[in-house]
Image (cartoon, rainbow, N blue to C red; front, side, top):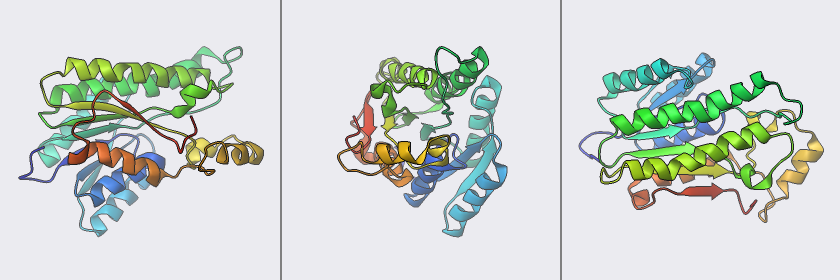
Length: 246
């Protein structure tokens, strides 16, 4: 990566949860960070203020990743502000129960639009814009391996996303850009906790050999490794950060 300036990272869906922690940790590691959000403007601005209060550089940009024009605008605004983009973390996603036998097409389309279409568009834009040394990191899920009932559309969206990782890595052959996925296990975020009973949460907490739910910090550290110089030789991989959950 070019070291005569601060490296720049875009993190989609980073106003809260895992994305927020990824953006904050990248800023702590010296990145200028673009906080992407759809609706949570106040939370995005709060994160920008937090990063700037520690002498970091950050800006918030609204944009729906399922829209090609808004994804393009996100990258264009980031480039105008910081001059380049070095790392792209496709984190924006939705997770909701959707039983196959009773889920509406609207619910299926909503999940696919963000998790698969959105990540595809972000990956495609990043592939066009990143120069040698760039990193593309997408967020998958370890729940793929569990075949969890009622999460068929979510699992399908993440399984399809994982299949894109080695394909794009090969399409970028010779350009020095890596493409990887990070697949968290159960992580204590609002997105994950929503709709689950305490009994379900207790069971999930002891499912991994480390016997706890993951934290956003656990995931952010893995992403930051892939974005760092230390992660330069990791390519076309899915890194399962789950405490042994699967």
